[in-house]
Structures are given as structure tokens and as C-alpha cells.
Image 1: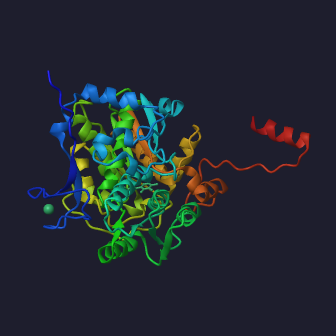
Image 2 (image 1 turned 30 degrees about the vertical axis):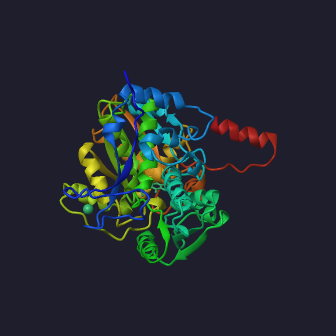
Image 3 (image 1 turned 90 degrees about the vertical axis):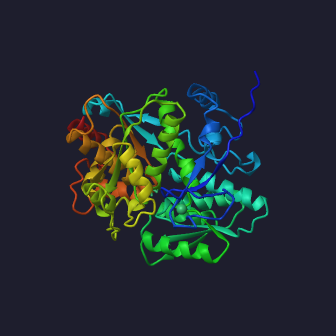
Length: 446
Ligand SMILES: *Cc1c(COP(=O)(O)O)cnc(C)c1O
Ligand SMILES: [Zn+2]
């Protein structure tokens, strides 16, 4: 029996039905030349199917816990599915992925679920899931520069986390980076991250959608490479979230995955990961997906309610979930396709609902950012409405580290979030350093 080594390949492909035009991954291109539609990275599924689903599962399992590059990264341990043709020496990795799947235990029981897990994507090098996509994009740029292409810098518009990830990975590779942020709309922690990593940081008097508009034009005028998720390289890294989830559940597929969304790249990535696993026989069913939006920035919710018949961009209102304050999502078409295929729903959370949900789950040991709060609130609402059923197994995607959002947590526990009751407020007790006074407090509380 002769076994030839599979030669995996991937290229960009237009997502428009009936077009499907292809471009090599080392071309500087973000949308199709024929119709302006988004591209996706398409893999040679025939070649990948030369390994059975069981063989892939075993291969991925065998790489868990590796101390060697590139398998010591959750993304690059799936390299054949991500960027098969990148040279290992061009990979720019900070040990992203392999994030914990947090079992909420008592909370799941109280809710009557057979499991409620929080995928801790924010416990990562720069504190958000954006690291997963950025390692792929910056590695590809690194390879293109090594091949002699003239790329002077990488640039992105950001609500805070994309810029932190880009600045860090670019700094690691020695590539200049340029960041466009909406002035006064990101947290202090998020703002200072790219500054520390030496990026050129521009604060623009606009919102995220305005920054996106600028960066698109900048990257057309100069040899500056666009690092937003309309560049589908990002999606390839982010889709490993799905693979990690089922791997951590011993290759069992959850009933539901709930994910917060703004520009809608991540929900598209989540779906793509599950699709590939199903196509390649690693799993035999798909979960249902809930895309959760802040009520103040919920253009997809409106579209969902109309059966996706139409989609109208909006001007997003201010929300505590600042990373998803987006009214004109770039990846809306990809996201709708995924939601339709996964019997998906869109749910919204008000400022009060997202705050209470984040802090409710904190009481079970988590430390949730407001975006995770949006997804948790959506989960609670879907349980109440009967969409999520008793005994379902649910995974909530946590997108950022709570430590990036100290203002949010402090405000909540001081009862200072406008128009909310801070139902789960936990006030700090100020007390004299006197044992009798201290005992009095303890007697009233314990
Ligand atoms: C980017 C981001 C999101 C939204 O992801 P999209 O791909 O834009 O939908 C959610 N939460 C956090 C913390 C983020 O940084
Ligand atoms: Zn096309």
C-alpha cells in the first residue's frame, strides 16, 4: 500500500454564490475584484478528507499540551486547517488559544441545564479572542514580507481589542502598526495596550464605523495591510474556538453556543469551525447558535425579526459593551448564512440586563466583561422563553478579560451605572480597625 503525504492547500475565494473567484493567499486583496463581495479562505477539503474524522481527532488530541512550536498554540496546533502553507519560521505566536472551558457547575444546576460552560477566550495574551485571528494575519504578512513583498505597515480600525492584538503581534514580528480608535470610546486598559507596544495610535472624532471607513481608504492608497476581520485570514484563526470547545467536551457537540457580536466576524468564524468539523467527520451534528447583541447596537436583531428579508445599517448607540458598539457590520452576509444553517437566533440585552448577567455569573467565580454579559443575558432570556431547554448543554463565548473593563465592574458595585439597579451590588464595608466593630459587621452578615 502506498500512502502519499497529503498536500494541503488554501486560497481566498469570493463568498458570492455563482462567483467563487479565487485568489492566492499572498495577494493583497480583501474583496472580490468582480463584485466587491467578501472573501473567505477555502481549504482543499478533498485533500483534508484523506484523514478520517477519527484520525484528525487523534492528531489534534496528540498535540494538546505540546511544549514545541507551533503546536504549543491552540491555533497552530490546527495548522493544516488554518494556513497549511505557512513556514513555521514565519509564524508569529504568543501561545494563543487553548483557553479554559469554565464549568459553571452550581449555576448550570440552578438553571436546570445539563451544563453551562464559558469558553474563556479573553484569557489570552492581550486579553481578548482577537489574538486567535491576529496570529494568523500577522504570520501571513510576515511570510509575505519575507518573500520580498513591499508591505510597510499593518493597520486596523478597532473598538479596543483588535488594536491591542494587532499592536502586540506586529511588535513581536517587528512590523510597524497603525491603529484607528474612536476617541473616548474604549476603556483605559484597551487604549494603553497599543500605545505600550509602540503602535501609531490615532484617536478619531467618530465611532467605530467611521474609523472602519477611514482605514479602508488608507489601505487602498498605501502599501499598508488591512487587519480588520473583513480580511478573512482573521476568521481562520478564530474558527479554532469551535474545535477547542468540542475537543474539551470530549468531542461532544453542545446543544447551543451563545456568542456576542458586533462586526459579526467571530460568529462567522465559529460557524465555519463547526462546518469544517462536520464536513470532515469529526462531529456528526451542529449546535444551534445564538448571536447576542447589545440592545443599543442591534442591527442584526432587527433583520432577524424580519426573517433576514432586509438588513439596514444603523448608528449604534452608546453601550457598556463598547467592543460591539457597531451599527454597520462588515461580515453581516457571512453571519446570516451561518445563522440560517445553524437554526440560529438573535437575542438582545439592555444595559441593565447585560450588567446584571455579567455580575450574576461573577458570583460563581467568573469575572465577566460586559460583552460576555450580553451573551449571558441572552442565555438567561432563551432559557426563560423555552428556546434553550432543560437539560441542554450550553456554551457561552467569553470574548474579553474582565480586567480590561475595571470601570464597568467598579461602576456596578458602586451602583453608578445609569438607569440600572445594580441588583447584585456588593458594597465594600468601611470599618474601623477595631475587633468589636469588625465582629459586629460579621454578625450582621454571616
Ligand atoms: C471584537 C469583539 C467582539 C465582537 O466580535 P465581532 O467579530 O466584531 O462580532 C465581542 N466582544 C469583544 C470583547 C470583542 O473584542
Ligand atoms: Zn466574486
